[in-house]
Structure formats: C-alpha cells, structure tokens
Length: 468
Image (tube, rainbow, N blue to C red; front, side, top):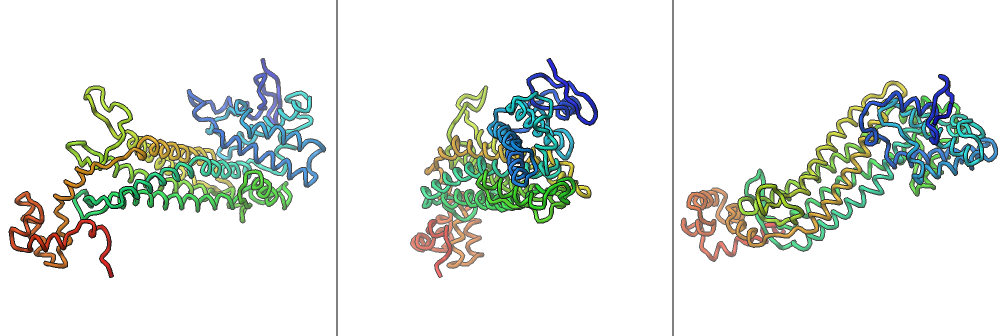
C-alpha cells in the first residue's frame, strides 16, 4: 500500500502509514548502500534536536507573523512527538547522504508537516494546511539547521552521558586515592623501578588526568553553545530569514533546553566550517588517551598474578580462558583500550572532514556528527562500565607491594644527600650484583651503618618534597 506525493522532480510512491514524503523516499532509495541500515541511521539525540529546532522555528516565525494562524501550534504539537521519540520509525535515513544533511532536514520537515496535517484532520501528503518547506522550514535552510542540530545533539549527549560517567569514575578513583594515601610502593619510570610513590598518589594521578581532559571537553562545549549557525540560511547571509531570527532561535532553544546559547558571530564561518566540533572531537580523543593510560597502568599493576607485578587485585568478572582453568583477565581494561582506539580513529575522520569546507559550505556534516556522537557514547559507556565492574573493586596486594618496595634498589636515591651520587651508585651496583638489598649492600661496603640507613631512608618521606 502506497500513496503518491510530489516534489520538484515529480511523483513519488510513499509507503502507506509513513509520515515522510517525496524527498525522504528518494533518499531511502538512492542511498541504500549497506546491508544493515539500522546501525547507520540517526540516533535519538539528532532526531530530538531536529524536533527542538523545528518547534522553536515555528514559535519564532509565529512571533514574527510569518505563519498562517494556527499553523505554529500544529507544527509544535508534531515536533513534540519528534522530541519525545514516538516518531523515530519515520526517520529512516542513513548518515550516508548529502554532505549538507539536506535529506535529513527534509525528512524532519515532511514528517512534522504530515503529522501536523493529520492532527488537523487533513489528508497526509496534501501539504495543506501545513507545508514542509513553506511552513516547517520557514526562515531556515538545511545549511543552518543541520549545523545547529549537530551542536545541540552533541551538547545534550555530553551533558546527559559523558559528564556523569567521568564524574562517577573520578569520584571512585579519589576515594581509592584517599583510602591508600599512605600505602608506599615502588614507583616506575621507563618500566623500570624508580623512587617510591604512594598508591594513593598513583591512583590520584589517574583522576587528575581524566579531570583535566574533561575540562577541555567542557571548554569545547562552550564553543558549541555560543556558535549556532541558525539564522544564516543557505550561504550564511541570512537570505529569506528575518535579521532577528537567529538571536530569537538561540534564546528560545536555550530556554527549552536549559542552556546558555548564542548565535554564531559569523554565520558564513558557521556553515562553511565545523571547528567547534573538531575541537570537541580532539578533546574527546584526549579523554580517551587519559583513559587508556589509566587502563594500561591498571593492567600492568595487576599483571600476573604470580609471574607479573601483581600489586593490584582486580574483580574477576568472568572466566578468562576456555582452556586454562582459574584464569581471570583484565577485560574491563581491554574494553576501555579498544574504545580508546575507536575514539582516536573517529577523531581522525572528524579532523579530516573538518578540513573540507569549500567556500560557504562544509559537506561532511553527517560523518562529523556521527563520529563525535559515537565517541561520546562509547566513552561514556566504557568509563561507566569500568567504574562499576573494575575500579570500585580494586584492592591492593599489600604483601606484594611491601616485598617489591623492600627490594627496590632506587631507595638509594635517599642516600644522595648523605654519601653522594657516586657512592650511592656503587652501593646499588653491589646490591644488584649480589642480589641483596640496598641496606645490606651499603653496610657491607662500609658506606653507612644500619642506624644511619634507617634514619636516612624512610620510604614515606621519599614520596614528598623535602621540607624547606
């Protein structure tokens, strides 16, 4: 069962029961490039942002007297359903389409217009009393709608998913850092034994790195909030849009979403480039790098448990081998590492796409949007899972930590102020050759007495600066 709708190219058959129209149907047919289309369709954040933009535009156009009486209310009612998610099945398009996202903008226009017509008791597909272009798309172009949607979708996902996940993980790490603030252990540089640190300092450094990376994401988000393209229409000049449309849209959207939003200072730049999203992607890559550094530290410190470092004990979430009984692997870390690799790859695509603005338009908008949103979702999910299934259950192996600390040749660093670097180096050489401790070696060669050593070498004092 189909109905016939028309666009500028002629008639198109639309599946009965679908609110999309001719332009969407053409895109469904012309961009059918994958066997599993579901994984390449727009997600909830983008569809909701489309609804928000169309609802706000109807309100602004109504304020300016640009819509027939009652049309704004019909558009708003249909847009509310788009925002709520009840019409998601009527957004069938893949991200692989026009680089401007024109088909997606028209998909929203057609769905909202047809649903509004239905609400008014009219005939779906008639374009009366609500027209997808003349009414739903009034004062807009795909070239300013889609960049605005890109920003709004990213902001809502950052705030709804990523920030809470990173905040919970860093809270867990800070708790662990406080709990083990006085547990002295071997420090390591170049994968070699180094001067002591506390386990609390080590874990706290992971939290600090994640927090610093998140701060960069939040700075990029501020750019997203204050650089909305809406109001620029086709080429950034604002053609067919009232001068006040962009500022009014930013104010209305900000009120609806609880955000401090502002129109772009230069609308030509806002449609031709997507530097705010490129910066956001780069900040997400940095966050992924910080997460990977933390994960690598965790799996090194938990390696073994008997033939590795073995200083941390991780939760055994599942059997680790189909052949080796009793094996447990750091699977949460491995998951985080693979997510980090994917996010870094996503950023490479975004960075390239961001360079491809030509004159007044960047035509890589869908792939930029998809990769940034994927990175947000992956990082948020991975860090939340790591927190829940790994970080909250980390325990130190105190006996193993103490044994490693006692055998650490780099305790000799504390001897430098007392016997000099060269003499301390000879003590270390003797300890390494004979397989004994620094204390035993120094006493054997007469570099110091047992009393001197115990007075000079207190591992706890080696984990902080000397007093002034």
